Image 1: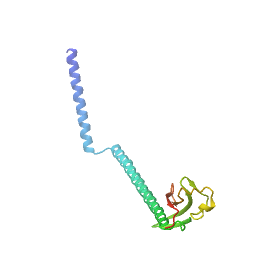
Image 2 (image 1 turned 180 degrees about the horizontal axis):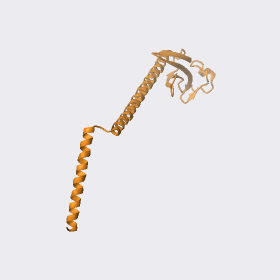
Image 3 (image 1 turned 90 degrees about the vertical axis):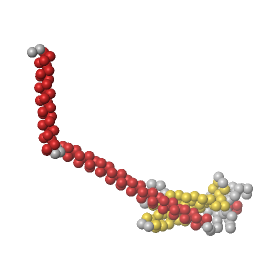
Amino acid sequence: MTTAKLFAAVTGHLRRALNTQSDNATTERSEGGFTLIEVVVSFTLLIIIGSTVMVGIGNGIHASNATRVRTTASNVARDYIEQARSMSPAQVTAISPTSVKVGAQTFTVTRSVSVGQPGLTFAAGVTCATAPNQTGLYNSLLPLMLYITVTVSWNGASAPARSDTALACVSA
């Protein structure tokens, strides 16, 4: 036999032997079901994916609750601003920290009031009525303004909700 024929014969025998072993492995595997390693890997992937989904859902719920509480706090601040706007400037006063309960959440509301002119705030205790008399900084050409700031805080707040407004010191 020549070398080429011998090589072809050996190669053919090897191919047949490998195909037979491959067919036997496939047949044995399909009859035997999944291997233990495949089941463990699948279960591990299922746990990892499930945990990731649960963490994502938990973060979404937390963010939604935080947004709801912040929106409620902003609405409380807006209500106090609107209350101040409905009064005459002489009646608007600062409010010491006051507790307000909305649903299950308790908020602390503080309203500060100062009098000034654009770009200038007078010392504490100056009111719309007394500003021209108590300060030498008064400029009769500029309007007197009542600056109102409402701050609403609550447990767990990263930063309080705040609302500001300015009213002209003119009694209605």
